[in-house]
Length: 449
Image (cartoon, helix red, strand yellow):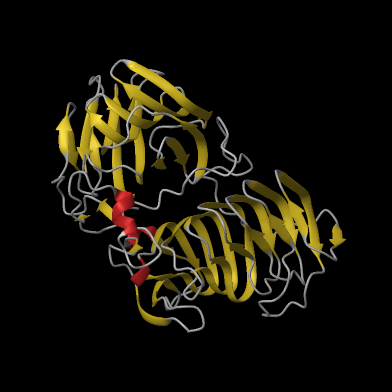
């Protein structure tokens, strides 16, 4: 499951912020300024403070000393200010309920940083660490278990600090402990592994309605198997106009249908329009369904099913973090998920059948953002392409636990690369396949059956 790519560091002089770097670019998207998957077998560029660290044969950076009070590895620039750091983190063992394995941002010293920690108690906690003083910005009970990979992300934008686990925000708050600093990998009385470290300047800004803490969706866990079949509706409801959603809408697995004509017209209204921070769960979308679901900001789709995709199943527009957890889609002649806004789409525990593409980062929208997708634990059948991205804009697609069914000739394209163009033109395909920079997966991430 370990993506293979060579470490890449773009030079950022001390005192030059990531935000300034992004502002200097000619395009309207942020930069990936650091990445390391340890696939070259070493950890050059990292500085150690405590612990026993090695890069194992699978390209995982391991800390094995559970007796170490604080084991840390730091990288990056002390002048980095506004940025997001993300990594895959796997706790191996905890010495106590307060032991931790985590990811750090804005580290100004070995004991001063913001830290997103997976705790031996099973919780995830976003912390401001100043020596022996640890302030909890927020936390969530996740049932953290050893031996499981978690994707941690810390965003530091001004005084706003946000923490995400597997794409779901677990905490957000304001804190002025540190305005700049390096990234770090951290354990305390625990052992763990780290992989796929990425730093970008996209950040995402302050949340529209920042909560003290928020709990990830519980209908489907990050390690739940993709559904093996399609659900039977508990009832049907014809819809004559778009249903607006703020907060949470739980459809109880009713089928909703009746918008549009079932064709590919981009002028069709959506079935559901989600406000920033909204959650749509337990819904079956029948045909016709117009333009499916529109997310006007950060949104979460839990156990949502599209029986017959018309134009698109869902379009992600105004936010920075969108999560699709569980559910499935079929019969999308073009694409299932359209990503028009900035930020990252997380697709997990999902199945797609008889479709053109599972995901497409817009290649000719009016604003050219850098866009990312993380695809984990999905089943793919009779689908041409899993993800399409624009490499000239710095898009990335990450894949793990992808099962492709009924494709003995391996005709399904995992990751197709395009050259994004201004609105009114058509993007051109420029390649496909893993490259360690934009299309991130290894052969073990893809299985055929």
